Length: 264
Length: 262
Image 1 (cartoon, chains in turn green, cyan):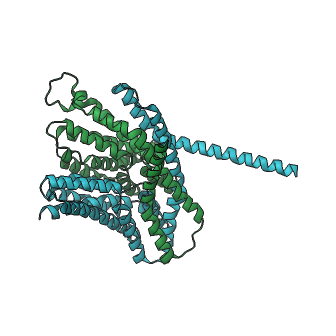
Image 2 (image 1 turned 120 degrees about the vertical axis):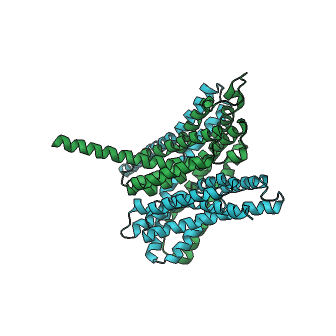
Image 3 (image 1 turned 60 degrees about the horizontal axis):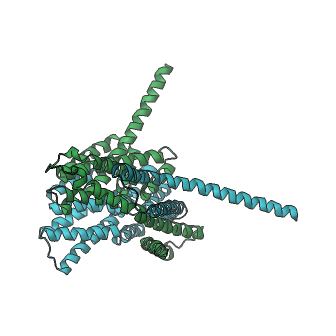
């Protein structure tokens, strides 16, 4: 019981420390420069306190329940015994021999992104600002699908040993082309969602998976090949969010065309 | 007197019932956010790896903490971080002093990034890679200098990113040209950068933005876009985080090219 309390206390301290620079900065500018009365001071302070408590509990809970199992799982699924099966003699299995790790990567990518607090914040704000035109769940699902695809490709890259550059260059070319084709209003949001996918929940699990895989596969250097997973997980959501809006756009156009045709 | 008392009792009953209802709805929402993750973990533990959960009690306790934590965080967003970001943006717009707004923006990006635990971890790891490749000595001072240099580079670039993002809102620069140009630039630099820095550069772009910074910076952008005439909060307000994930890649690649080419 004492251990539990100190654990929670520790993560509360950590999240409080994350808040500290922001609070200092805002107070400094408020006192010496802006000097305007703040309405609802108490409520704002309580909100900040809630954020600190919430993030602290969230992290402590993840560390207690999810990360240990998730990391063990990532290691087991990418371990030679699991991949090759007992008694298999194959020296260098083909890329499709790693079936479960792809499924695991995709599902973990999707589900951790749905739970990512920064993404929830962005999605809530976008729904409010667009007056409901952008659906919070639609956006989060699009981003999560993008992360899932990104992680599967990241696993494929580590297994095949293809250079990081080739994937990234192709991804960027697609993004640059898409940028000029999508409705303008979604571009900032799409780029933003690429940046927020990878923080609290996603990073520890996919980094463990990348390192585990590059340890298992002969000829991979964990220090060089273990990196880059995060890059994939922030690249592909940009593509998927723009694709989601493009699809929605085409659907509405198609529907309105059908509608006017039926009328005529 | 009696009437009044019962009336008050009824009122407080109603208040309690409403509070419980609101709490239940919000907790359910937080639970729904976290449910897929638990289903995935449970599926793999039971069906694929075929092992029972190690200390199930721990897991359930942790899950409850995660749901309650998320609930508090989401409440805090609406009560604290969002309104603070927006009212600061409004105050700056009212004062009309752009120089101070830019100073504030830089400090906001820099100070929240420089102490970010994920960044500290990644720059220590990067120093390992550099030492393995033989670019820096394994002695303490050059090792620490390299890691610290990397950290300051990333923090500086995030500060600069927020400044650029705010300038974009003020001057109405088109984001799609900036982003397309920025990513093309990063692509070209990738070909010339040493191989040891590339993975780290791209990862550092992803880890710089924490769950506290993102809502605050977003609210700052949206607040600015709402207080300036002829700005659309959706088109101009978002995009600050985009700069904060692009610029670190740029600067870390450059840092790698400078340090490794010595």
